[in-house]
Image 1: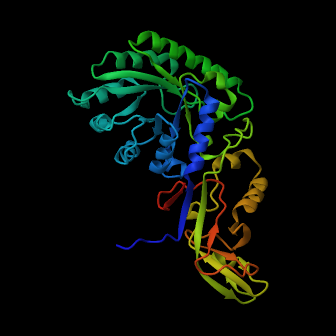
Image 2 (image 1 turned 60 degrees about the vertical axis):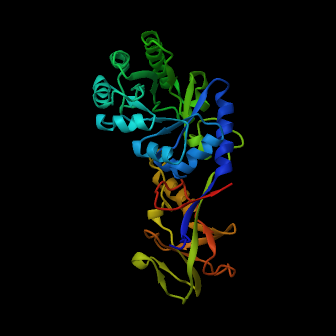
Image 3 (image 1 turned 135 degrees about the horizontal axis):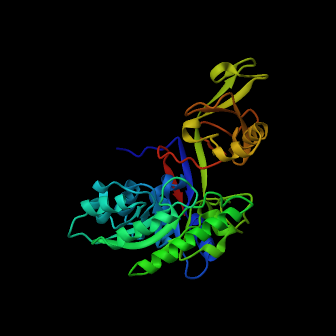
Length: 369
């Protein structure tokens, strides 16, 4: 089959990913591994493409949330250690062993399930015990962690590799609660290291934690947001020289001339006040255009959020020149006003500013550098 030229795509700057990884390792300091987290389709950059860029920059650990992501990395030749950040069912233990993936456990039942389905001739499974220090999702409570560690240490074919936790409020200005949670985590780490025959790796800091609480780096940090060129919080210090890593782009399908009084889009909400030259682009909310994370909605007034969204999302750029999007954004199509941009023709490429990179795997990723 002939190659298909995409109408819309995410352009990924591989060099910027590598640059950001090196910046983060400098921030982490000597003797601290930086686990590059590539869950959520590599934060929209492509699971495999992002992981390969980070590995090329020196990453020895990659973090994923699904076993299928780990399988894709191994199939592509990624050789770094991979941690599956969520528990898996026992039936997937043989696949995890075959892929040489480190697994997460949160309770003795997780340990027993993996042990019962592990093949006797397989390499030992390396396990990390997840601790719940306030997120309220996955993990053993600090008081219960000792039982999980004992289950791992007492089961043949399993190896106690690490303990980790996730900070729910590291991105806030007041990190006093984080410090009390980190104190509880520190007690768990010391107990696990005492109870285990070999060294136990500890990791708790994410992007915001690395910037605000660097004293808790332990032997590894797990970073996503910073690697992809974004500051994790307005409260956190900025990491100098972070580079933008992506752009959402689309090709013009057709240029049309609409008469005065014509309407555009569902509901006919936009009405031409003059003869208007328009460009139709094959991109829309199904591709992530105009989508915003939930956090800003919760932390700002609806009016402020609406104004910011309008400013940042409802224009596309042709060679840096803005063209207003007309009417509602549809699932995979928008119309832009190019009356004052005579050089825009069918096939021209627009950049669609977006509050975050689309995570959908439906859009192709084009890697530069």
